[in-house]
Amino acid sequence: MNKLTFRPGPDIVAIEHIPEPETTSSGIIIETVRKQKYPARGIVLAVGPNMSMDIEVGETVLYQMAIEEGIKLDGFVFDLALSQNILGVFPTEE
Image 1 (cartoon, rainbow, N blue to C red):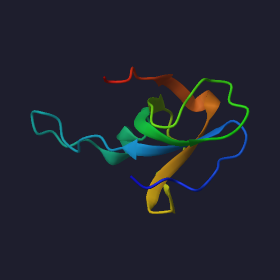
Image 2 (image 1 turned 90 degrees about the horizontal axis):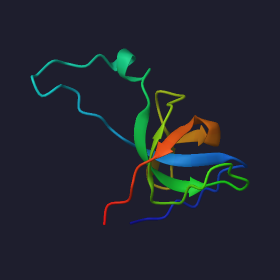
Image 3 (image 1 turned 90 degrees about the vertical axis):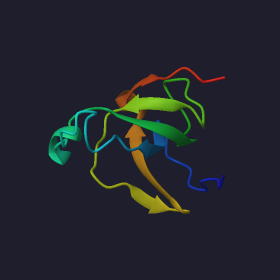
């Protein structure tokens, strides 16, 4: 796996968005605009200094999406989120 060379500023996290399915199990198409109002799931790529939460690179988090399109850099497409927009961390699968 490549490593993101970008270092976020204070209290900011770079997150690789995990896309949600475009349809439900019954085949209903989910509206794109409606999906973006809900929190998203993603993998932490980089963490800035002075984080108010204990978040580490590689963890899966639930965060509030701020923009539709991610930032493209170092072969990654990622979102930037303030630590206050991180809603929680999922348990690590072992």
